[in-house]
Image (cartoon, rainbow, N blue to C red):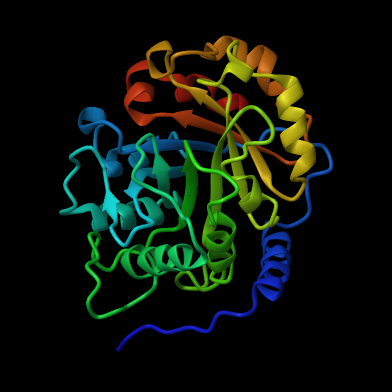
Length: 302
């Protein structure tokens, strides 16, 4: 049986989405402080180890698979750097059993993606929902079988206001409490550090994102690493969204902006954790983290 749903008017959808994310996220902490939340990107290196191994490490509270790097023109492509899809569904379920949600990141470093129209955004939603979540269109190939992912991350290296990511965000928000077994569909974005990030600003301004991972690396605005000024702008602009400090796991993981673990513990986290909507730390990526033990060295301070 084909999966169908009704789309409410965009104005209603935004209002409902904002209300859902506020209710589901709960009130902001009065004082900020440690959360213990460490998100890692996985899927960029064949020899980073398996998804199951990443979750079994006990280091992470969310894993983001990257990337769905082609979409917007009727063609879709998932690039996990040669990791085989066989057995991936079981690994996803294992992560979920351990309490580690697994999301899929759209975008990435290539140029094969865009959302030039509302229709292309709705088509991408249909693809995501029926391929990786709770949809059941008969002609859809599900690479992970009956395993359902937990969320969608927007990692946009190009594009801008002409793209219709806000339409996609609203469509996803309507399924926040219907992603599977009543669980939340985590809607996140991974942005450049300089505020605002025009690639995803229109989508973020809907107010329906649960988390924003701010990349304090590979950006001229944060060439030296963490910027308290930019952090403050992100935290103030989206008070109902959890804001994460994004860091590379080693100097080899980024061209600029590496912050060593001692400096992160001593100088960065005390500043970041003053924000009432501080969320935790995002690590780029599992391959480099596995070799540097970066997340292990900061986990008790996050």
